[in-house]
Length: 305
Image (cartoon, rainbow, N blue to C red):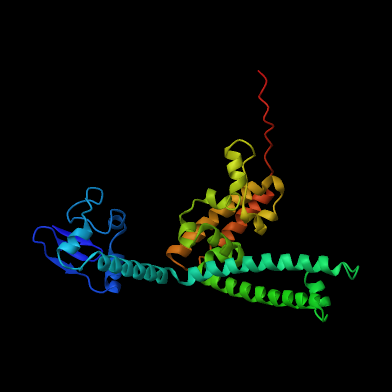
């Protein structure tokens, strides 16, 4: 029986060994191994299931077959093969979606830095002037100063320009990767949902109920422990369909939006083509919800007997 190993193949009966080649070639062979085989080890016996396979002592077999002179050569070979395998997997994962995830993280970092610096600039400016300017207006007012406060103001303006550029790139990339999500939720919210889920693939596998409360995990866990009411929405609260609906009907609007977002993410994942029917259907459903009468609140009191 042939044993597939990280360094090649080994015939358990005849003892013949076939070396896969250089570390890069060995890594290429490992990539072609199925996930089931990978979970059972670097190889398995042909004709057996991964659960039934018994992992042999590969080091002893390789040294006995003369593939490697000693343990140090064996260790060096397996190290180079492992590094090559990691590099190949990282290059495979680095695509448009990976760029999108990095871009949204960069945008969040820029927002945090700019907010902190704007607060610092405001506190600093209060020492010299009583004008109550904030944000960009304050930075523009102090940008001509020659002192350190002027340097800080100019840095804030440069960071704001960088944020606009990154956000424009993010919106363009999101429309290309997830056209239906971008059409339903807007490019920025769609990118944040993809980032929060860990990728478009994971987002497409999530049920609508999970998408509805995405971003409200802490409130959900408190509800499960009986210490808080059930959250009606998470980050999709920023969507106009939810924010523009009365408080009593926001739960129904969030459910309708989450259902369409779940459908849109699956279309983006497996088709990538824009479905022009999703957005009108969502708008129609939101209009129906807003025209409907809110249900009666439950008081929690038991009915009298």
